Structures are given as structure tokens and as C-alpha cells.
Length: 372
Image (cartoon, rainbow, N blue to C red; front, top):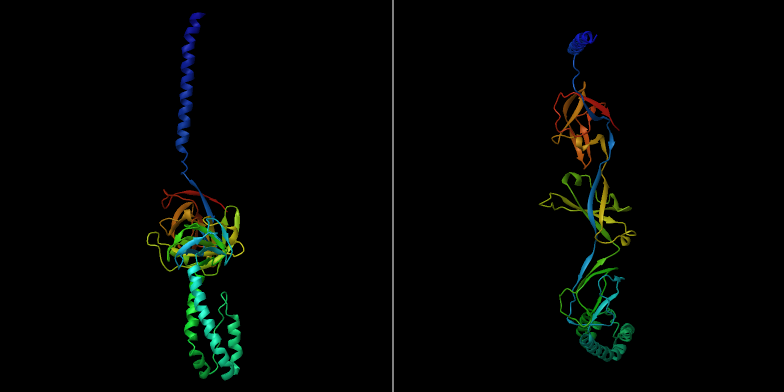
């Protein structure tokens, strides 16, 4: 019995092996008969539709005060402590006294000449009342209004005789000397030319200042602007007074294009464009903040907007025809960071590849998946 089992087992194993080999051989023959399907690459595509499109220009810039003034006194002297407010970060009202330079000498010079002027008017008033009574009233009013704090406007003479009469008393020389000395005296009081903030201060009470030396900087707080750099293509769509949307963080503000520069930056080949913020919003926005500016260009008729990634060699795109890639030369009116505004080269209803395909070649078989 054992001998019979040992004799049958090899025969069974051999039969099973032959059966398996026959099955595998038949499958291989069947696979050879079937034609192999060509490989098709899946690509994202879009159906071309021509409409009126409005380019969106996006640029970054820093918020800056439009007016920034360096303070330079016209007269020398010691800075007095009384009324001194020129400290970095301090808010200022228009016309507010920033600091005062010792004015004793200038005030005394003005008062000396003013005294001589009063004396000259007092001398000719009695004779004027007798000889030219019609002119007496205006000169008498001038005399009464003449004080340290007020140098009234010079009365107009009504006749050559009146002018000659006044000139005999050296009046005109004294009047203009007093006017010049008053202007010199007033230069000792440095006031804010506009509402703003002290950006820099280089002096303190007791400091000696010299004429023409910079002592500080103030910036205007109610007028802010943003300088952005646009390419020569983008500038064609920018118009003075056109609206701009400004995004700073999560907040959105409104503005407009104030001016467009004429000088091209040699290094970057860009042109500066200045965006003016709306006056009511300007005081809320701090200097130095980074802003994202969105500008709307003029409408382009019969244009289709496609991803810029679909553009090859600056002027070509791939369309899908018969399941294969076909290169097409296109013309673009504007290129943004994300989009290409195509005006010709494609036909309405064409299926265009809208993803980057650096290894694509004409005739490559693809399977287009249309995306919105």
C-alpha cells in the first residue's frame, strides 16, 4: 500500500504542473491578441468664452504721510523752555507753537523802530488835519491801531500832494523797517504748518540753534498716500482719479490714484504710482504699514481670462483637439500675477489646458477635465 502511494504521488504532481503551464500559456496568447490602449495624461482644461473683462492690478506699498517737513529755524538763539512741545511722537494742531527762540533782542529792535514810526506819525497829524483834512481820518486810525502786536496795513494816499506830505517825515522808511523787524521777531516762534505728529526731534530746552540747522521733522496726519511700482504694461491701465481699494490686514479702505510718475526706475524698470487715501480715513492709518492696493483697469472687449500658468513661451497655449495637444499662438492684452487676458488666437468653444505642463509636446494624448 505504501509503495502504491509513493508511485502515484509524483504522477499527480506532474499532471498538476502541466495543467498550470497550459493555462498560463493560453492566457499569454489571449493577451497578445488584445491591442494595448495608448496612455492618456489627465489635464485640467477650460472652455473658451469671450466676454468684456476688467483687469485687476494688485501691488504692494507702504503708507506714508504726503507732507513731511524738516524744521530749520531762520534765526539763531537759545531755545526757551516755556511752550516747548517738540518731542518725538507728540500730536500737533495746525498753528500750534512748537518752541520759541529767545526773542528779546529782536523784540527790542522792533519796538525801537515802532517808537520812531509813532513819533513820525504824531508829528505830521496836526499839519495833515489843517492842510489835508479829508486824509486825516485814515491816518489818525492808523496811529491808534499801531501797537507792539499790530502793525496795520499802510493807508493808501489819495493824491501826489498827500504822498509828498507824508514822505517829508521819513515815514515810509520807518514803516518798512518796522515791518522787516517784526518779521524777524516772529521768526523766533516756530509753529506747526499743519496738523501732524513729531517724527523726530533733535533739540531740547536750553539748546543753541543756528540759522538753517535742522532741529526736527513733523509729518502730516490727515493726508496719507501709498507709493506702488507698476510695470509699463500695468501703467497703461492706470488713470489719475480712478478708484483704488486698499487692504491693510483685515481692513479695507478707499482711495484714488493721485498722480503717476514719468521716471522709470533703472533697476526694476517700473513706474511709481501714488495712491491717495480718503481724508476721513487717513488719520486712522499709521505711517509705515504695508498695504495691498487693488486697481481696476478699463474694460477689455472680447477677452477671455485664463490662468497665467497656461501660457508658454510668453505667447503660446495648448488646446485639446481630438484628444491630443495642439499649440496655439495667442495675443494677451494684460498679464497679472495669476491671470492672462487673451484677446485673440483662440476660438469660442476651444478646450484650453489651464495647468502648467512643462514636459508637454504637440500631439501628446490627453484626457481633458473641464474646470470652472
